[in-house]
Image (cartoon, rainbow, N blue to C red; front, side, top):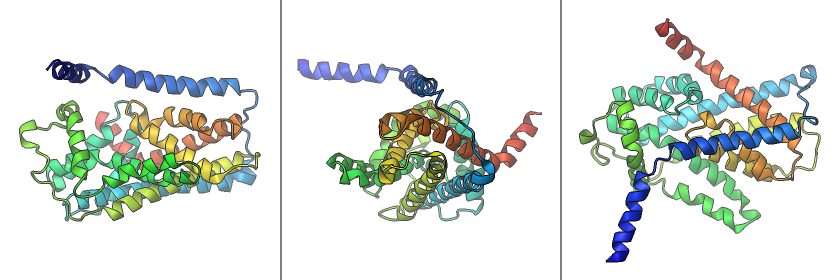
Length: 318
């Protein structure tokens, strides 16, 4: 009896904990970690790059970053279709691409809000809500699945396939119910009415497994890495690099940046954990310069694709 009361008290205690401050602290610590190593290696860091010689490689990196956004958009479209919306317009892809830059806005939910409102008009609020919030889980599953090739180094990497196992009609509802736990925090922002939004009410998965959506997410990760790898290879003068190991580090670091909502598009967190996971296998000055160049290139790609949306919002404010 006492044990039950104790367990209940513990559960109530955990429910009452507000995780806003720990999230912000985690983000600030990650950013500080990156800044510390940047200042530590500042004498060895050089941003001088012969653009006449290497400009074409930077351009190719930029193109891969643009391609990754479109692959991510196609993944989202197929998630919406998998959730039971057959009348998906072609504008779904362009709308995703246009609103992608909102992930950099502090708050971390504005791109979700825009996409929720868009899907709500096409289908119903339930599908709009769940298909929008489930997309990061698809990205995380794809990233972990690719990183699981590290099983050739350690059996531990086998466990990275677990998120992908939940991407089926029988188990995905468990993931969606977890989203229910954060639903109360975004209900007011998305203007939802709790009484009307039940999980199984109008969300009907059309197949056992979302193959197309996951494949597009895998393509998204691969093209994102290709953009980074071109930057890294352009700057790298340290030839003894294990490409598979570099790829695994990229996937894991990107995954951590993805799941930290306080960091806009994982800024600071992705870079800090890339440094942490790579250890001493790669010179830190090369990693730092590569990460900064890649962040500038990928952000520029997002901004370029989203310019029409940004101008439209600015005109409304003016």
